[in-house]
Image 1: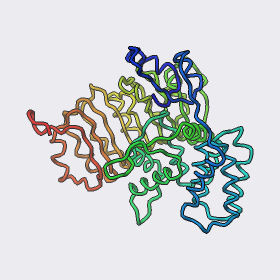
Image 2: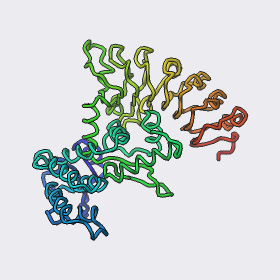
Image 3: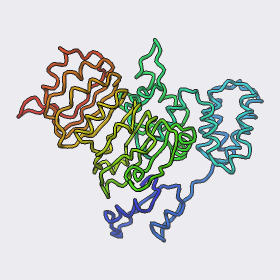
Image 4: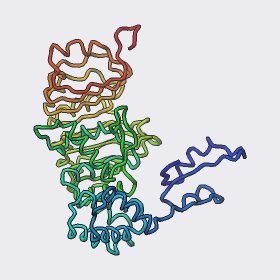
Length: 424
């Protein structure tokens, strides 16, 4: 079991692994050194060794000077000093190697990195190295990196989801030579090459399908995003507790709502009107991956809660029919909309076409045996549509050509029903 933070995770599955005295072993990886003894007093704990100075230098030399026999002695000396100041931390060596590898070979720049690392890494670990890597990132990549802090820790994130979200947020600077999708892929590949993002799965063409970030990098993106008022996490209790009259005031343009316990205690969610949400541009209610199997019910979306939303992701909770109509009515600036509609929902209203800026529409629907409105296919900004439904009648697509859906680039669905007896 990889990357375990709490012994409760093990307790939940422990019964499925009885000890039959057959010599089998269970291995955990964690940054919590006490976890092994919390699991079992007889557990054997193995600590990862730090790199020696020689190993750190070999790794950095391979990244910086591979095939470069003409590197001057001055740069070699500075690089060795930087490698030594990484204190044997593999992540630090990898990040700093990527950082100075894309710098110009100027002694003053490399010396600046060495001085910034001086003595501080011993007390701050990798955080100072991550701060340096972030500081020297191009401006257009900083927002993309901080956005990883909006997702639950340890979650694999679809690259296509990041493409659509970054575009809706305005992070992608489109030019005449590349489309938004290609630029988003380029941005993500740049973050991977900087060792800030890890590829967890590739598609059949070798491109990035899913990715995530190392725990230390996640902590940094989370804290940095909050410090710069880029992103804030809010506990579900702030939305549900109607008794408190003094919610924490903050200025934040992006809100990620933490819903980790809905699997155990599903309850209706009520957004408190006094919460400072009028300046929130993005709201992501993603929840914990396990909790999404038993979604909470979302009952109240006051017209006064969110006024300038561009991104609204509510895949982690159920949305009622009347609430969905209010979303369409009062959030006309939306560029990205993802919802999970409750069973009792009926038609997707034709008023969806009022979202004239909408680029991405994702809907999880458990009874979409109704035609989609023709007005949806007339939305000129709409690029990506995902209809995640068990059954989707083909009559939904009969009039697509006639109304003109030339702007749509991707259209996804699980099952298309051609007639009552045939599923393709």
